[in-house]
Length: 353
Image (cartoon, rainbow, N blue to C red):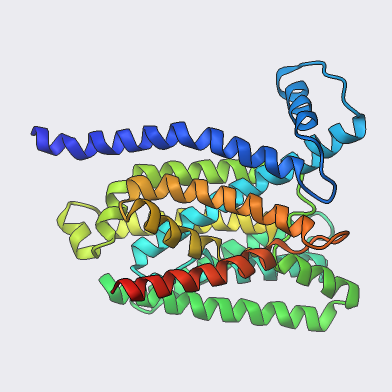
């Protein structure tokens, strides 16, 4: 191996170490903000005292109610929001690179629609006889929908390059429509007004019910997805120029494509099963980060994960304080922010051309 061959690896390592140094303090600040701000503001020094008591075993005198709100409710909610934001953003990066489609997002594979069907089947139809939670039903539905889309794409012939990407997109659209129709049918057939309202609130994205137990699902999913993406930086860069270019660089196109899409699907399924459908994170964040750090995945992956985490924490804060006495579905906030931002990105690209 020549000196020239080693330069990209050294550059990639420096970039990853740089992001490893930047991410923790920024994420910590966002988590503290998400814990301090909400329906009722809590002073920052109280938040830091509670965190010191719980994490480091300090003995600062703190009101028990404030301690419970900070540790058991708000911090758990902020951690789940950060993991979901990072996971959805990473899934968007992977799918946009592999499918070479700037409109690809984590829900393109029918995962959100399948999760909705699974959640409704448990909450309204009573599937599982009370032994299965709504989150478990949503996860099972998401995996079932992805399996259906994968089978449909395989039966359609697949192919290579843009044709394979097109087949996956069309299969995803078909799967989404099918499971959305099943969800609407189940709600219309079996749900009463109160159940329908609760389901619609969940479908728009909801962090109100999350607790520390939910971190067992989302934290490993986000970390595993980040690790897989980092290990496949070179492959993602190659897929940006097409599967033929990736094959010419010695990448096992089919195996890598299937593996990365599967990881993106599992990561998205884990997030959606806990929070419901939160749109625009996986679509807008990768595009926004490309404008900031460029298109090379050695910077784009950590930047997107960090930006997605911070964005969803901030969106959750807005959802809790924008209407006094009422918490908005977080998906409403991400759509209200994400849609204009995405429009500005599109206009900016057109102007650049």
